[in-house]
Length: 219
Image 1 (cartoon, rainbow, N blue to C red):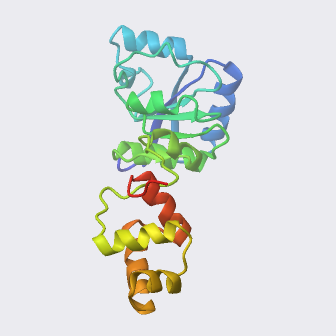
Image 2: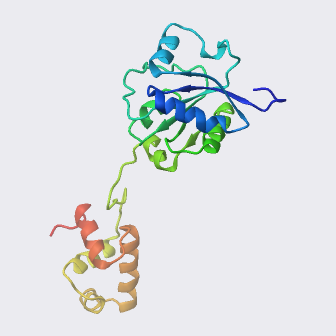
Image 3: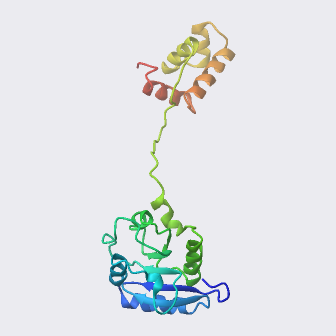
């Protein structure tokens, strides 16, 4: 892109002629945008497959591509990263986001994005920065194992804590535990707090459940 003109030269790609025309009209109103070419996805893929460089169009040099993906399938795209230029993909939802991301397209917005947002995304892409609609972010994140009740990796209870835990499982109060073990209420409270901490539990009941799952209790 010329530093003097400050123009971003783009090609518009869309299978639907109405989508191409609408996108061209939207971007043509932006002073910083120079639309060099318009083409269908089929023509674009044909150029890519024959090795022709879309950056060498006769109408002038090209900075990037704005592709209105629409609802069409993207399964026909090559399995390897095929795009020699930055691409801003406009999508109706996040269905195709993971595949496009894997192919190197890191600028993806919704189809109703403003011209300013599209140009900003292309500017970012020119500097190797990713731009994603907030609703698309989770589609490119690696899966995270979800556990509603994560267990501690390793729990070691002292013999006295094990005794207190066993009595907790029987439903005894701190005072009853103190009486049976012949220790003070304060000492029982200390052991109970230690057990809760080791089992990552918020209550006595939760501690018993966690301990049972870990095999510390046989009920």
